[in-house]
Image 1: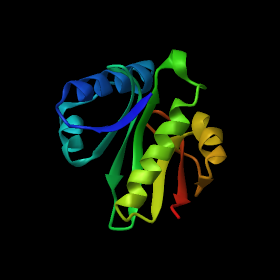
Image 2: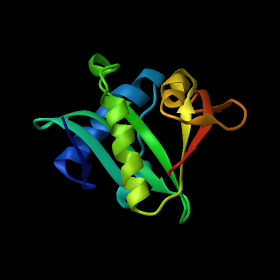
Image 3: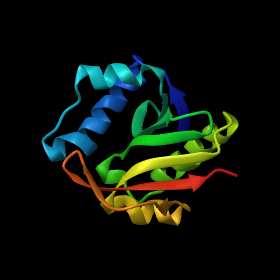
Length: 143
C-alpha cells in the first residue's frame, strides 16, 4: 500500500471524491456541492493506494499555525478493519508534525470514536449533530 499527498483536480482527486461520496455522503442521502469541493483546493489531500486504486483517504485543513483539522476520512467498505485507516492517520499525523502543527482535531462520527481513541485521540465536549448524524470533537497533541 502506498500513502501519498495527492493534487487537487488530479485523477487521484477524482477517485477521492467518488470514495468520499460513496462512504460518507450517499448513505446519508447527501452529496457534495461544487462550492464545498472548490474550498478543498488549499487542503492537504491524502490517499492510500494499491496500484492505482484508492483504498482510503482523508484531508488536513489548517485551522491556525499550530492546529490542523482532519476531515473526510474514508476507507472502502470492504477494506475497513484492515489497517488502512490507521496507516492514513499515522501518515497524516507525520505530515502535520513535519509542517509544524502541534495539535490535530476533528469532528468524529460517533460510530468512529472508538477507532480514534485507540490512536490516542480524546473526546472534547458534548455530542453534536453534523451532516444529520451525531459527532464529537476529538483532538490529540502531536509530539
